[in-house]
Every structure is written in C-alpha cells, then in structure tokens.
Length: 346
Image 1: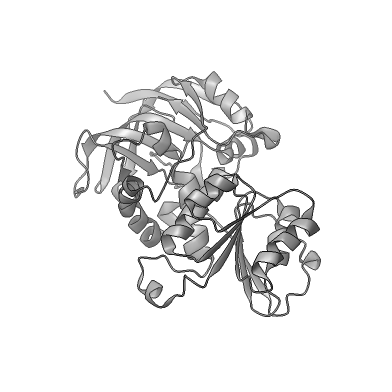
Image 2: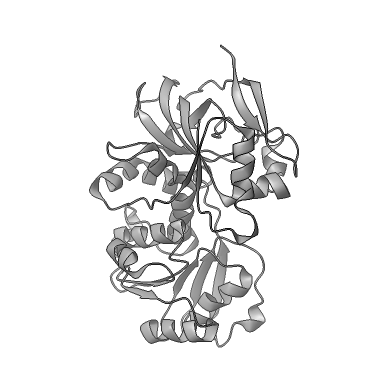
C-alpha cells in the first residue's frame, strides 16, 4: 500500500478537501512511521487555511495539524528510544513539504521530538500538549533569559528569587507556563486570569483578576511585584493588551517580555522604563530549538508520570477524516471564539 486517506489544503483561503490518493510517508534515519490516532488543531491551523500564513515555507498542497498522536508501526535506521506498538506524541515540523502533520492516516515523527505516552494519559490528553507546551518552553527558557533547569547555566541562576508574570492564565499555554515555571523552581509566579484554585495547584503563588481595566489590573500586579519585575510572558493578548505586562516591568532594571502574538506594540504607551526593555516573539517549534526541545521531549514522560505536567481538559472531538468536520472546527477558531483545542480522531 503506497497511498492513504488525507485532508489537504490545496489553496489558501479555500476549504480543506479530502483525498484517498495521498502518498504514505516512509521513515528516514531517526524517524518513526506512525498510524495517526488523533490530530490536534489550534488557532494557527485556521490562519494557515484562511490567511495563508506559513504557506511560503510549507508549500501546497499541505496537510495541517502539528499536534499528532499515533502508534508506531515502523522505525527508521538509528531509532533506539521507540519500538513498534508504542503510543507516541510529537510536534510536527513546519518544514517545506512536511510529512509529519496529523490530518492523514500515516505520518512520520522525528525521534528527537517525540515522547512515549505513559499509561493513564489518554491520546486526547497527549494531543493537547505539543504546540501549547513547546511554545511556552521556548518562551520561558529561550526568549526570556531564564535557563532551562537541566542546563549548566541553571546551576548559577537564582530561580528562588525570580518573579515571572504570566498574562493569560486561563489559556492552555498559560496553564503550562505555570507548570514549567514551577518545575524550574521559580519562586514567585504571578498570573493574570484563570481559575485561582487550579493555577495554585499547578504552582502559581498569586492569581490576579483580569477584569476592571488595564490601570486597575496593573495596580494589582504592582501591589505584588513592586517595581522589580524583570520577566513577563503574554499568552493571549493582541498588542494593545500587551501594554499591561510591558508597563508592569521594572523602571530601574532592564525588563524582558515575550509574547505569542507578534504584531507591533505602540511603545509610546509604555511609561517610565528608564533601564529599557526587550520584546521577543515566541515561535514554539521544536525543530527550530533542537537542544532545548529535544531534552524536554526526553523528560516529558517522566513529568507526566510524576504529575509535574498536568494536561488541561476541555477539547472538542470529531471522528473520522472528514473535510466537513475539519472545516467546521477551523471555523470555530475565528472571531475570538472560546474554542481552545480541537481533536480529530483519525
């Protein structure tokens, strides 16, 4: 058998279509071939379809879904961490002509960016992980100058006396940010938005109400951090909303801010930052950060088993490789819809 069922984007700003003649990808060295069980969809998949973002890199036609779960059916040369029959999760790459994405019956994974799914973690739970947790991993331990806790630099970094502000604690990525900050041992984790009891279970030290307007929320933050905040991460806001975290940064020490939505900020509305600040745009793709992400993927099964990483639930599920289902799910990400994550059972 050389062909398979798949869902394809053949032209930007057009619906996804079904085919049953898509080539089955074969694993190269250090790759796995998997029978896909769950393909996770995120807001960026809708933007690829409707706006054409990433298509200059990916090319057309393209299979979407970067959050992929499956069962190993074949291994390439040099693979030593996985065997046939393993349940695995991976973040598909954004490389030209990618063969890894999830809206197809069979895909290939890079061994370096794949994790075995522990017993007790469902395929749907696992499919919620890749895009959300890798974006946050890169934001905290690459874009902010905070070393990953397993690195040599971590030995001299004062995590206990570090404060991190996370704006968007109710989002999936925001909840993972709290968990990764806790794993690193960051002493004060201040979160805006989200459920207080849940976030404090994950490790937040302060959970602040996001309502009341920017000035009111800024005062809540400053009551906790004073004028000493150096590190901030905005998970959800457009540039106007990002002014909250930027204005919370210290005036006497250089601040660092990273965000998932990269459009320009009106820095004339950032006041009193005498020591300056640096803004980074997070692009959370494993293959672009191989050392950081590769080490994390090796550690992820242990974090899941130990309960250090807890997967938020609340995804939407559809069954079967149906173009109608996928187009409906992608439509649900439009216009600020509350849908956080959608899963297609392949």
